[in-house]
Length: 71
Image 1 (tube, helix red, strand yellow):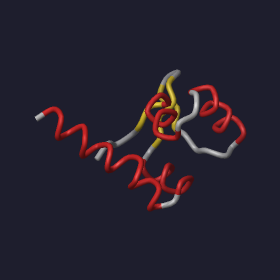
Image 2 (spheres, one colour):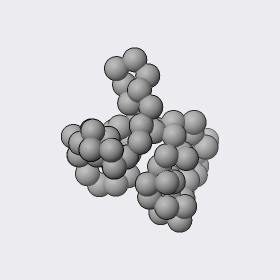
Image 3 (spheres, one colour):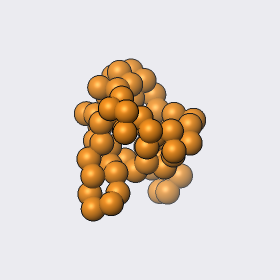
């Protein structure tokens, strides 16, 4: 499991643009951690926003698929 996700990864998983993710962070709807100039999203913050089941569906299943493809 990933320690953090990037804006692009979250946007792809939610089927929205990265700009929408930045707006959601700016509006306070989605919590993010700033590392330098970059935003990162922890699994706990994404679970709080999406709910446990939706998080698993979007991120944990995706991780399993990526692992299967790479080795």
